[in-house]
Length: 119
Image (cartoon, rainbow, N blue to C red; front, side, top):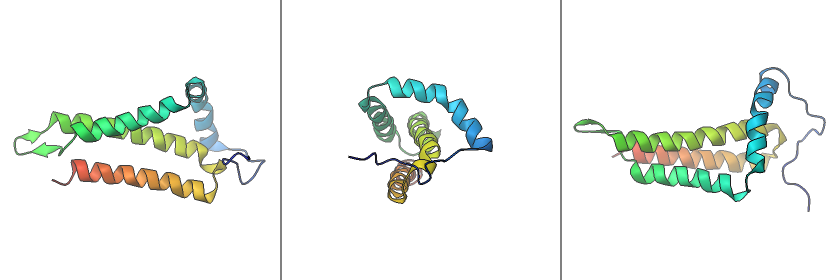
């Protein structure tokens, strides 16, 4: 079976800001690669689920809700981690894999809007 993640250009070389971000990300990616493959997925899912369950509207009649701020913070941490990984992997993804990742991020944004903005 072939590797589903491959660069459209096998001789891809990043330059400029992208290369600097990739170099700065290497230590964190090396630590992430040493973890069991299921652990990062479970951690992101836990951040999203816990954030959604303890969340709620950010503002109530009496002012800012602490639970809403904590819940939103957990989801934002998960979103930023996913965006970071998407940015790093973008040049190496096929069109269908890019669309799937964008769909996941769109779903996450929908959770944020429904949980924290509308009520």
